[in-house]
Amino acid sequence: MSNSLILLSFLLLVFSAGAGLSAFIVRKKLSNMHGMLFTMSIAMGIGLFAGTLMGIFFQDNMLLATVIGMGSGAIIGIFMGMFFSFLAVFEGLLSGIMAGMMGAMLGVMLKPMDWDRIIMIMFTIVVLICLMILFEVFTYIKKRNFLINILQNPFFVGPIFFLLCYFLFLQAPFF
Image (cartoon, rainbow, N blue to C red; front, side, top):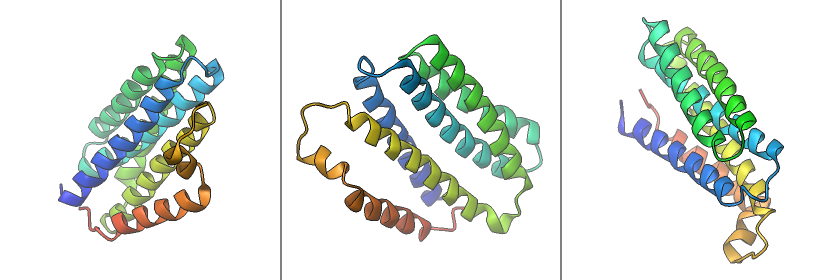
């Protein structure tokens, strides 16, 4: 495992934790549907990334890759859903399991020359999910400071997101 893959995984966890923490802070203002959507989104993103990564790591053992991918997606889904409702827990569990399974299948089927690209694509999808959750959460914050106003401007966040993904893609090869 290279340093750039460790950096990518760390950034993914930071973004996911930030989105989860922000949803946790405004959870009383959110409807059950928002809780289910946030839980499903984060569980699916993490399950897909972890499943793909495990499928790449364990090319010869698809069962182990699938179990680890499903487990990580399910754990994140359950943990995130506990803050909202039982339906959110159920939704997070099921979507995390499904995404972990699909990610493991994708990781096992890929050729080694495509590993870096798919990891970067999965990272971009998860960060985009986290940013969309943050945009939705920011609408529930009544006291807006300068930082929140900047982060809600898509003309500022879009290029930053593009540059971050481009910079991280330049760190390849991850494997």
